[in-house]
Image 1 (cartoon, rainbow, N blue to C red):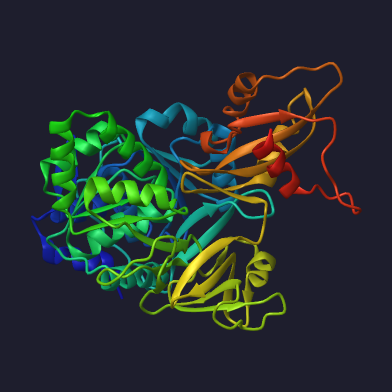
Image 2 (tube, rainbow, N blue to C red):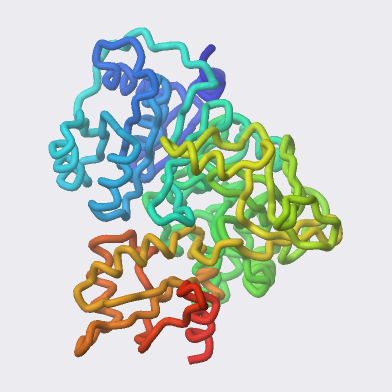
Amino acid sequence: MNLPLIDRSQQHGNKIAIATTEGSFSYQYLLQTSAKIATNLLNNTKDLQEQRVAFLIPSGFQYVATQWGIWRAGGIAVPLCISHPKPELDYVIADSGASIIVAHPNFEALLRQIAQERNLRFILTSENLPETVSLLPEIDIARRGLIIYTSGTTGKPKGVVTTHQNIQAQITSLISAWEWKSEDSILHFLPLHHIHGIINVLSCALWIGAQCEMLTKFDAQIVWQRIIEGNLTLFMAVPTIYVKLIAAWEAADKDTQKKMSAGCAKMRLMVSGSAALPVQVLEKWRNISGHFLLERYGMTEIGMALSNPLHGERLAGYVGKPLPEVEIQLVDERGNVVSPGTSGEIQVKSPGVFLEYWQKPEATAKAFRDGWFCTGDFAVVENDNYRILGRMSVDIIKTGGYKVSALEIEEVLRTHPHIQECAVVGVADSEWGEIVSAALILQSGSNLSLETLRSWAKERLATYKVPTQIMTVEELPRNAMGKVIKPSISQLFLTR
């Protein structure tokens, strides 16, 4: 059996699949190029047989062709984050047990060194591809296809493994719910090491034969210019991006504002996800665009699970109802299903739920109860719609659409020569959802400014994990067991 995502694209031929500033690329060209990349990866073998291939490529055609090439060669795609410093890239490469690294020339210096240190095969996207294509293996959809790294409550990120079958289920659920069509055109500026960018935008577009226009990074002026041009039908972003687009609209002159709003009105759907959407942002965006943003809820381990309706009433502050093929239940601490109006932990069953945490059988087993995946998120059903209340763990921070582990950041901060002890929390923020905030006990006689700490931390952590605010304290609030009381620390930041 071959992969339906790849097979389906054959019927779209010369239709444009990927548009970038460098040019437009047809489905036919994507098939040809990904077959050559697969041939190169195979290197005279018949099948990569689930070897992990880590790749670091900016958003664009090369990213997509490489991802497809890995899949067509029988490998597991491990997308790396373009903003991560070397220690984080090295961790993902080592933890996934990648045997091949594929890199864009921009990242050669960073990744060639890791490849040499770990004795891994290293391929640059600028290298010539083979002229002839070898016989590619048949890939069963039950095979593992993707490992996305996500922060958990236990510190270091875990590799979330999805099979091609899981990926297909995640895609088809959204295609059905949001009525994707081959005539659709979407602008893509989201990170491509994250489920939102990989599945909801890119893979849904390619499954249905739509056009995906890819920007290497988000830029409010460029995005508004594309909206004004008026040939987009779908738009998906995180709340932080909507905040930036609102600011750009407010800074524009009246004539430009009219053009911006008219461009939005031509679209059939605008979606917000990856973090809670503040109601004031939803209302401002509605006034600007005429769109009541469709909020949905999902996570790396499950794909999307809940969504407001495409047609019908959407409620501010709610994430709607279960998507097609998704079952949801809310349970109390004892695992009993709660009655409507009572809050409980969200548990999910669906064909889109991930296979396992990579080489972490205990963590995988702990994440499931009687076949249900335990999300760690609390919700309540009101008016037949789900409302997310927050996370069970205070150690997970959601900032700008990213899920960040406070424990991982604390581990890094404790290696700073001036920091004796620390506690990291998320503090509510209207733009970012939460901002990473660190309470620090400094070594005797030491001083540490936020600017100095941030520049030190950026060499060790992804930018979105670096604390945005710090506070020096004499001691951290703790309970009788010596455990730091994080809600008290969050309160300190809010009341200072």
